[in-house]
Image 1 (cartoon, rainbow, N blue to C red):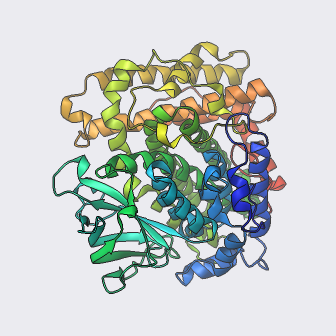
Image 2 (cartoon, helix red, strand yellow):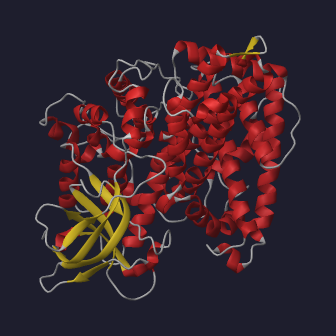
Length: 596
């Protein structure tokens, strides 16, 4: 196994390590790697730490990524976490990568995106469709500490990348000539290679584009240039720029997959990145919640602490509940890549759509408790405003909210006819945060299947959930409410007009997609609680109180007015908020020990 301090010779050893279901030590490796990052990055509240919030804010003000942060991640050889074990890296479970990157995101979203997530987003295209030589070259770049950028964007066409104009025209020697520009590319100026989504045919339609892996070394320097850097409101340290090529020759070996398969390759790659990226950002909101809890305990108003004010207390408990909900949906989506790859398209799109929205709403609610201090750009609470500015970036780009809804909408009527209320529930392993998984089946990802085992789990829960204690009765009633909502969604989806089954659908159809994502989040939370209660290892996750709170908030998001919850629910959730704050553990499903 590769670890942060191992020499380069470990590259070969990792390729022969056992992988797949039943592989020994998956959870131990994951926990060790998370702890290793946390130790090296240090206590972010300690101002003597070169990676403290204070130092990270200074780098942000300067519009640069933290030099100390990048040095630490170099030492930890983070690039290997984006490379599958079969290709010499550490990537064996997608949910583990989320946990690892959460340690970076809790300190600095820009460092997480700017150092490595862009390389991961580029790499999955090659892991999905590349040949052995391409995978070897890319793995070597990343495990050696290099960076790779991915270029889908052209500002003239936004998310409609099938209309992109950037060309890779056939050359006489069998290679390609690159011509045109790509904009808003993270790390374009310092990447060792670029994954370029390119037009290889003038004909319209989805077969007109291909993916190329282009290495910087050996390119004709007179025929290409890096475009000026963009200024950004959030993630100021990220180096966003563009590329322009003028008949730059590249070899035939740059083609990833087959000619004309670019759209299919990109959409399959999106399933992995959409499933993973939102869960990483839970770390940033964890920091925001921790910051406001510290404020609420220390700040006094009306002769009481802010924590004693009912509204403030409820807001903090609600924020914690939302983090658990987001992590539950993230868990289901990332593990579905391994267990239900043919169904991942809709789960990943739902995760990429809903989780950033929930996290952004949570940050807004927390800002109200923090008051005027959330405007302050330095000092004890300065990290809050940075995370608040950085978070919206997660809802932008090629996998933005509208693009994710546009992935879901064409599948609604098919799911309504073929899946909902008839499919078998998801396997229990989908909801177990620490159980082993088979390797990622990149070749099994499909664009749509008409199946939805996650919603089937929601339907099954209405008959399976206990209803003994007041908390259990609340959970059961809310699960029935969610099942009724799924029935309504089924009826509405069956009645969709042909145009409302496309990206040009009416606003009402986009609202159906929104409601569907909320139901998937409810199903995920129920599944996590059921498995925790069966296993009994985590007493809090096995407690129905947090699930009642989560389902209650989701029902209200759907416009329902559920009955008030027992007082014991808020008391139990509030108790856990304080326990994890004082005990320095994470506000997610893992309750991970933290350095600060």
